[in-house]
Image (tube, rainbow, N blue to C red; front, side, top):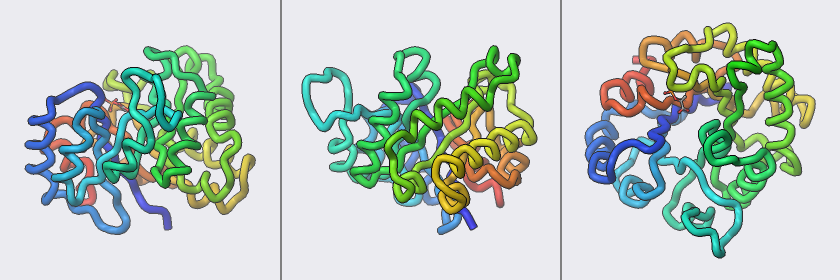
Length: 249
Ligand code: PEP
């Protein structure tokens, strides 16, 4: 049986003090067990302080660069994350791809650098509204997954978390229906099976992301091929975050 992984993505919200206050307030109320991982991806400036106060909540980075060190002003490296004990990093979020011009090749390099450091990449994929309306979602996602996993061994591929996030559902209040989300996540599992094998496809965790809230998380996570959620807006409010990660009651 696969675990579930529910991760908040705070994007560029909250100050360091607000983040510490939030984590201190909710951490002991999170009913994380060995079957559910509850996480929050915080802005990089907060990683160090927040990591020190989180016990039940797993702290994730929102991004990283793939080079070990060098003249890359403004970037953070994988060894920097490793030094803080960070175990997860979101890569290839659609905002990174669309606003900051990240390519599949860069995201693939980031995945490899993270895996080499035993940090779990949460690799995002997902289509625009136009691609969705054109009916070419699966081709689009297949290309992102194939390029994102290029050169990654089967053993490492199992450790990656894939986040399927249709761009038209991010921050818009439009949720893909559980059926739409399930269909694409099943296709993604098939793509992984074709690249690797049944075993990798059975083990890899696939999240859905896009306007997930406490009110709809159960219907989404009840789907066979959806193993968790990546949540933006609804993860910023304490009660709402607890409603997500403790959705089983
Ligand atoms: C996200 O930031 O990855 C996301 C899914 O945002 P929201 O939940 O606000 O749609």
